[in-house]
Amino acid sequence: MTETPHSLSSSRTLWELLDRRADLAPDRPLFLQEHRTLTFGALRARAERVAAGLYDMGVRPGTVVAWQLPTRVETAVLSFALARLGAVQTPVIPFYRDREVGFALRESKAEFFAVPGVWRGFDHTEMARRLGAKGVFEAYDGLPEGDPAVLPAPPTDGTAVRWIYWTSGTTSDPKGVLHTDRSLIAGGSCLAHALRPTAADVGSIAFPYAHIGGPDYTVMLLLYGFPAVLFEQFALPDALEEYREHGVTMAGGSTAFYSMFLAEQRGQPGDPVIPTLRLLAGGGAPKPPELYHAVVREMGVRLTHGYGMTEVPMITMGAPDDTPEELATTEGRPPEGMEVRIVDGEVRLRGEAVCRGYLDPAQTAEAFDADGFLRTGDLGHLTSSGHLVLTGRLKDVIIRKGENVSAKEIEDLLHAHPAVGDVAVIGLPDAERGERVCAVVEQPPGAEVLTLAAVTSYLRAEGLSTHKLPERLEVVDALPRNETLRKVLKYKLRERYAGTAIRER
Image: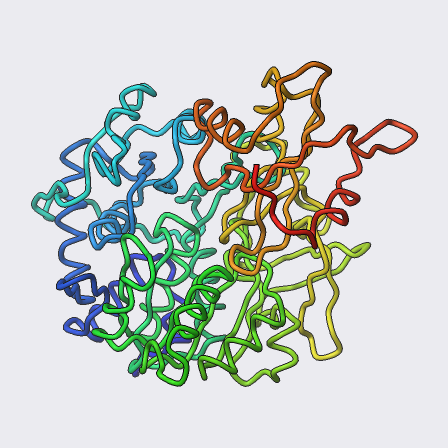
């Protein structure tokens, strides 16, 4: 019987999915990067050798291995090697620094930590040692290899927790999100069956492979047997050469990516920046309807946007045959097997793609209702056609370029600054980033006038990751508060500053 994408999606584990695809098409390309090509068969063979090398180092089924690596062929090989062993892997976004990385290592109790060494001018190996990480090894160009004969049988239980992803949520510290191979396969299947790719397509991964989107997208490649171009550092116009060289047909990532491609297209109207491109797709941040219409009109391609989160990598997705109005104003429809329930305006979810909870049992108990639905903290409604429209968030989270930024984390750090009496951090709409981070500060009497440069310099010194730094500062005489508990009314700040120009300070 011939394997189909739908039959492949029944694979119990990620390793089984790779194994079945490698049997079907061992010589077809899977990952393309610069002048390198890795086929499905080569990924399976090399991942087994690397799994053996890790086994020789002491990695066993169930061993927790953290990795903080850029989007490279070697990163994918290492991840599948760990999947072959049945280890528990905890990917960490490469631009996270001491605060987030230290928390992830402590909470996951990682026994090994793979780092890229010095990458983009930052010494990850030194940071790992500074944090007291165990089993540190570099995995940028070289990976440990050994004889696959030493390996135990591949894992067969796809419902065991083997992934710990990290999300900042609404608290200062990240939350460890627990996933299984089956939940990741289900999420990737949702994406694949919505976008309906073919074996003739060429995709692209221009976002961190350590993001939940890494396995999400890779599952789609394995199900449909087509390749993707990997970008270790994504910047336009430099990346366009690789898009053109490999004939990319599907690109995207998030709202920020759409805006960047559109800006390049506007520099050469009438001449497609990527002649082979037929589809932009992504999620992770709000999509203004006007951006959708501009992309379709000026780039001449389809744009489908979806809704996902670390806890549920794919919830809904726009489909190529949705109407322009549905594609512009909704997040698409949920796939078969994803239950969406609206309770008091909040979007709640149940299905195989939903995570198994958090490392902290208390957080798990709080996140799921009595019927087993995940409380997303997002507000929305379903249309008569079953499309989901998001209208806001209960969670105080800013989504910048597809990454969650905790307002409380920044506020907690700024409260310790001598020139800050009180502070509220809010997200403001941004066509390129989805949202931008704005700090609104109330200064104590006699304090030196605060500047944005001083704020960002202070937060950098405190170890805050670059992508969380405020891009705007507003100094006010008094923050707006309610009359009962004197709580800051952030919605008033959003209303006040959402439509005003960025001030230079």
